[in-house]
Image (cartoon, rainbow, N blue to C red):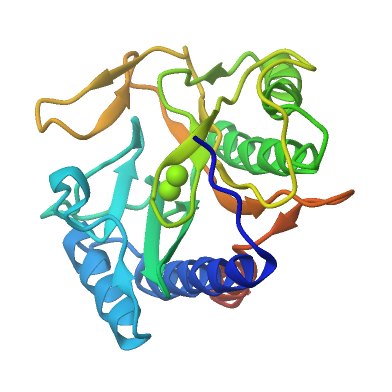
Length: 260
Ligand code: MG
Ligand code: MG
């Protein structure tokens, strides 16, 4: 069943979602060669708890971290640990928080120092397709319109769109109905209605679309070990215009300061 949110509930969920963006901005400040992924996880957990919220992923299905940190060929669900980041790494950081009973869920992919031109383009285009999907998240459209917008943009580059993992409804639970695939046909799937809140999260591979689960039972990586990028926003379905509840603004202002 699909849970519809009232305007008041959506505002609570905006607060959770904005806190995710602020948390990822804190992580961005610490993301440099030599940092351990476990150290980034600690930064995020402390920041979230300091804001009277609960890390949304920690303990979810037994997941041990506050963040999912997925490096290079890892797509999603990487477990923070003793891995030190290196110059040239591509790092997807996914974060969820629970505050006032509602989850926010958002992810951003960072470059550690300089990455190759191929990887830069993969990042730009993966972020671009997220916003193309979001444009379709309006009352009266169908879930397939989101996937179609993402797929029809990405296919021209020959990238692989991960199919095994999809976006999702989000609210009092981290994962609610409906599933929101990053591929699809225009006009297909369930109808989007005002009050639905969904996480849209394209996972795009530089190589083929096939993915494999690592022996840790969590980490998903590309089967061909080519790099993968992942961006995610929590979005409320509205009449006429999608309402993006999470934000990359703080993250990108940190990145601009570091690079400027
Ligand atoms: Mg997420
Ligand atoms: Mg998600």
